[in-house]
Image 1 (cartoon, rainbow, N blue to C red):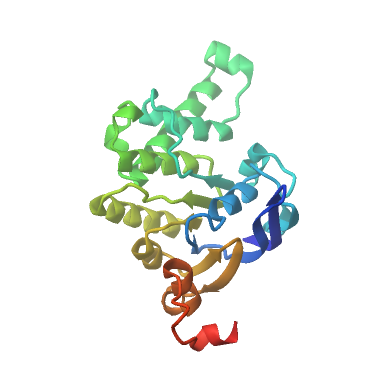
Image 2 (image 1 turned 90 degrees about the horizontal axis):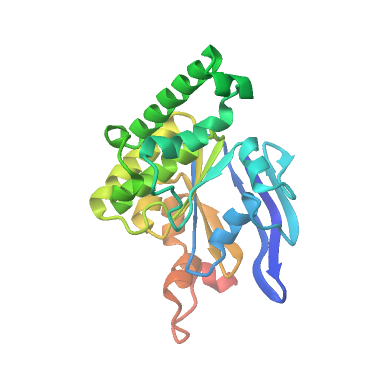
Length: 262
């Protein structure tokens, strides 16, 4: 579904990404991991049009995304969450989700001004969809509450519901369990699994290794702006290059296995 082909990004003389290539298959939960500063969020920012690549191609279903503004990329079928929660805290949960749902509503100015039957039917359908999405993340019972009153974990789930409201083909999750306690992580893992089963393809960045290993079918590892491996979770976990990227390497230790060929 999503393909990055030798994508590089430089800010002046600073090289952030170099020749990053990966493919996210339709229907999967795909993970991107790596140490702090590896360039993971930059990958998401390139995909969603917040910044442009220095070189390389980014395509969704074979159509280029390079050069498109973020709102047009959203219309193509990509939605995302952020490391730092970005919800409308002064609005209710249902209002937050309706912001995304309304992108798909079609009625004219006259329908809005005079509350014509088409407008009322569209608004009723939007609210029903918003309640359904809140139910997917376990928040429908709090639909009328102000978002600022939610716990941190609940706010993250609300952000996912709002992203889903745009009806994306591909959902990008940027560190979805950051700051969550173990119980909240378990709840979110169950919610993401259920969302994937409903037909949504998911691409996530995550530092919690247990979480990402338990969810993703394939995981790419980014280190110093380059992909060092992309494989099944069990293979990634055992890869000496991944262990070195996270833990470092003792220069006095013998070089073995995959390191010997570097």
